[in-house]
Amino acid sequence: MGRAYQNRKESMAKTSDAKAKVYSKYGREIYVCAKSGGLDPDGNLSLRALIDRAKKDQVPSHVIEKAINKAKGGGGEDFSPARYEGYGPGNCMVIVECLTDNPNRTFGDVRQCFTKTKSKIGTQGSVSHMFDHSAILVFKGDDEDAVLEALMMADVDVTDIECEDGSVAVFAPNTEYFKAKQALTDAFADIDFDVDAIQFLPQANTSLAGDDVEMFEKFLDMLNDLDDVQNIWHNVE
Image 1 (cartoon, one colour):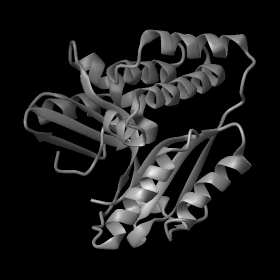
Image 2 (image 1 turned 135 degrees about the vertical axis):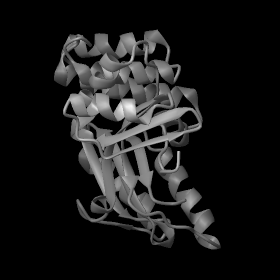
Image 3 (image 1 turned 120 degrees about the vertical axis):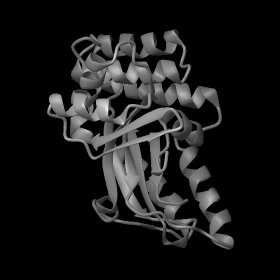
Image 4 (image 1 turned 180 degrees about the horizontal axis):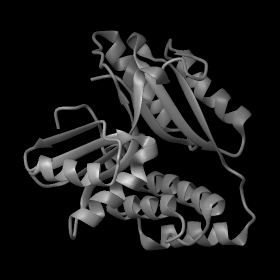
């Protein structure tokens, strides 16, 4: 696609090359989603979408079932979302999403990643205003007009539609995710989404050079090693 985005599979792979870590991160997210929104995927649309993404990323069924059963028990850890923002090497912009059962510990761990790579953690909103919090739906197709018509008929607020190399990419505000997905599912039989996610897309990208490249890779590696980190968004090309 012409617009800069990463599908969830790629972002999870960047979070950790080890499958066990990917499974762990999905397991934690499914547990939190099921515990807060209900165990039934038919009634908890966020859970259903999350399970679909996990399956696409080849997370085994037993990992998914274990997380849901853990939520069913009602006990266990009490995870909460945490988001940190700041400026990484070369003054790039970074958003770090976490699920944590100890916010003080997680903040300290994330801040250390910033300080050890000559980066600066910021306050809430310090860089997120330079990202679009977008729903992204990508699927096989070539009829941009038909897609736009289906979304308009369902009164979906669409940000952008791209058609390239036999795929259609729909971008919408994150709040329109379920509405957009349902409209496309209703309009096109047997639709299969290659990308089905809500992500932070940078409004402008930046390039790194020299020592900043190596420092940025170190910065990502340090964040990736933290169990509480779920996703890392940045504007580096």
